[in-house]
Length: 112
Image (cartoon, rainbow, N blue to C red; front, side, top):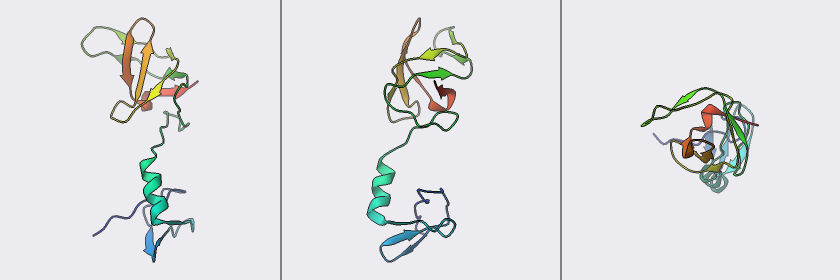
């Protein structure tokens, strides 16, 4: 069984292929197979509230984060300026005052 991509507009899993097009039966969105491949390559990073993140944004930590390897804790409400988005499990690289360079997960921050 082949897996078809989810609809880029409504994220429905019930898409089907008709000729060279993918079609979503829920929202009636149609897109070409080539456009679907390009959409998969361009990853969209979102914060805990669903806001789109970009390089250079300022974010706020939404919960206390314990640091591995040291006894420190990044407190809820800590502002992080000038983030850089990267691929991987921890998708934000940044510098936090008093802690230095580190990686964070986008699910634990909110765009300021």
